[in-house]
Image (cartoon, rainbow over all chains, first blue to last red; front, side, top):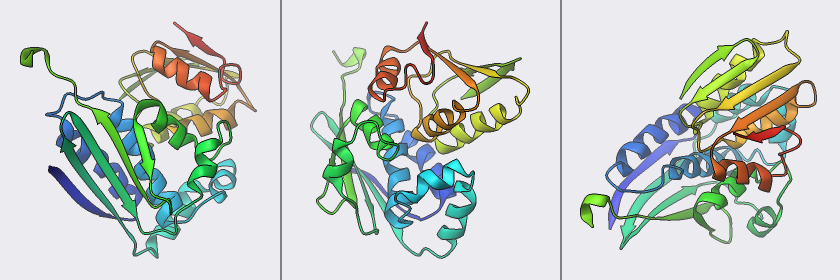
Length: 152
Length: 92
């Protein structure tokens, strides 16, 4: 069952606003609050590595304190969108995030543990089951809805 | 998320979950230039963003960072990322 969906522009501001939107949409489900962190990490990945194709440049930009300046410049010329949808199937909440970027080497990133890039995915994997499509431009993460005490 | 600063100690209440939260903490740290050691006290945060981890990792090359965490999962996460020593993570 579809709970909610949203299409956002490739913008840091829209990414930030989407977090409040997401919190509001899932507030009636008894899920681990870390799901919001997972959502933030994977949405940020779709934004910076998906639609803006930052890739390994991100590390260099952060090192030189140019990250914000560069992404804001890149997003001005980016017409790509990010598609978010939330579903409930049984006792599980599924969140899908799709970007319009070229994707990435999913298996490569998932197998790296301590490199700079892929840290957001590692954090996400710690708190939810995450699944990428082969191209690496769609991700779905799943979290169990636990019963509230008053439902027992 | 709420941030309180006492000398070189930054007390963070609530969850660090968004890019803006990371930027807020980064700005606070940037105002503490006179201190060689920065202590981040994560009172009740159960999470930390990759953006903040990236920033702290970079900063640890210039300053001594101490990260005091309460949540077991958060400690485990930092351990998984190999950051216990680099960020002087202490479980409190």
